[in-house]
Image (cartoon, rainbow, N blue to C red; front, side, top):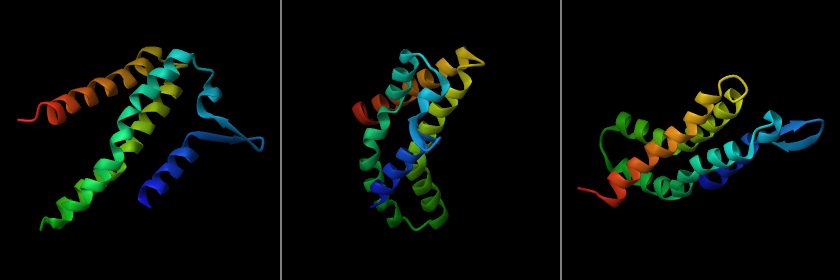
Length: 123
């Protein structure tokens, strides 16, 4: 149920309502195709979200309630961070192109590094 609600929020956030028609967000900013593809690649960690959301249920076995709720909130809300970065990159492209390009690139590098460190090569 939570996954369906999050997918609904993602769909609503990625659409623009204007003149009673639905237009995708990139059309609003007249962005080049390569930037749209780069931002969509940066959204790839959302594929792992159902596993993280399922695993977060087991956090409540811990006795520390505040730390558990903070960790749970961070895990549940990480797709919003990715979507916020994408939206910020789209908005910054017209003013500062270098920052708009570096946001999704940094996101890809960070999540690739964390994936390799904690999933592929755990110690």
